[in-house]
Structure formats: structure tokens, C-alpha cells
Length: 126
Length: 144
Image (cartoon, rainbow over all chains, first blue to last red):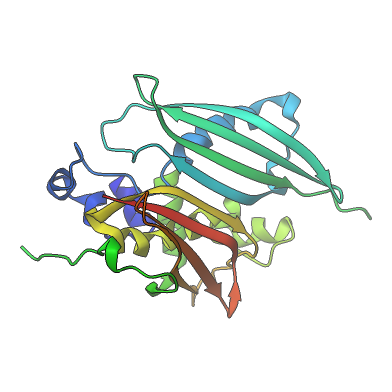
């Protein structure tokens, strides 16, 4: 989480310093708000590896992204992500694929849902 | 030990600018984000690959821009609250020149307040080269 915080140029103490995080009532450092993308990506890799999905990754563009939290992710959490493809639309030759990844802890309690729309660009025609 | 001033929910007003920050992305920034996030798509480090798929050159990861845009808001909130929701629409890419990098500016303003829930909606404006790179982009923060 610390490396991720550094990578997104965040110096917020709660992402780096366990003492600061504990003073704020957390068990350990808190993940930056976009950190769940790492969990979403594990499930996305499974989807893209499925030959039936037939997605050319070189044509994929990220359309939008959302994270909806029940509580912050804290170092030490053991999380499981389950991705569901919630919609596939064709728009002007492009495909828009929306997925929702529900991320829960070891008790099965909801932590965060990551919702993503990918745009698969149409093949260029000669 | 320094005491960092934290925002007081009672003193917030819709329209307040809470953050205004410029970030300099270099190719190094993209490399570090690739490592930390696991996104090794070569369009984020190989100009030749980027051009082969019709792009002007290496682009910043959209998720890097989304992450960086939230960082000054997280710093501003500190221990006073936490993020409940964060959403962005990616509208324009951020090409990162190998020598000069890319300057991205983030402005965060209070878009709405809910006194009962003690939440604030923070609207983000993220610019590169004088144009917005994110469409609708907002956080909802819950205050302790």
C-alpha cells in the first residue's frame, strides 16, 4: 500500500505511518482510495484470458471507474474480489463493457465495490 | 511532532476550493505506478508500441491520473474522515514526453454538503495542456 501511495504521489500520513493510522482509529495504514484497482485487475485478467471473451487488449481504453466503499481498506485485510460483467453495449462500432467487482473481507463483509467501463475500440477499416 | 490542521466539517461551504495542486509526471512516475499497480501495458512505457496502436506516444495510466487526483484530497482530509465513493470518467489521455514529462493540475471544490450524514461531495477538475482530462470526477467523503 505504501508503494502504491508513493506511486500516486500521496504523502498522507495515514497511508504511510502505522502510528498515525492507529491514532485515527485504524489497525494499520489505510490504502489510498484507488488501491482496489489492484484487486479489480486480478479479476479482469481472468476475464481477458478467457478466449470466449475475445477481447483484443491492445484496443481496450478505460472509459470510467468508480469505487464505492463500506469502509477503508487497511493493511492486514484479506480481500476477495468477485467480478460480474453487468453490461455489454455496442456504440458506434465500439463495444462498452461494464463490470462490477465486489470486494469482501474474510468475514464476507462488504469492503468496496469497483465498477469499471472499458471501451473496446472498433477495428479500423481500410 | 507537528500537528496537521484538519478540516472542520462545520466550517465547510459549498464552492470552497480545498485543493489546488500541480503535479509533474515523468516517465519515471509511470514506471513506478506500473510496478506498484501491476499494470504493465506497454503503451505506458514503449513509444513504439503506443504508436503502433495509433497513439501519439506513451500515455499515463488513466488510473495513475485518477489516483494522483485523489491524493491532495486525502492529504487535506487527513484523519478527519474517509472516502466513501470516488468516480471518474476518462475523457482525454495524458501523453508523457520522455524529456519534459507532463504537468497535470488538480483543483478540488466542495460541490455539496450533507449536514445530517456529515458527508461532503468534492468535485475535481483535472487539467493537462489547458484541457480537462477527466469528465465527471468526484469524491464523497464522510467526516468523523
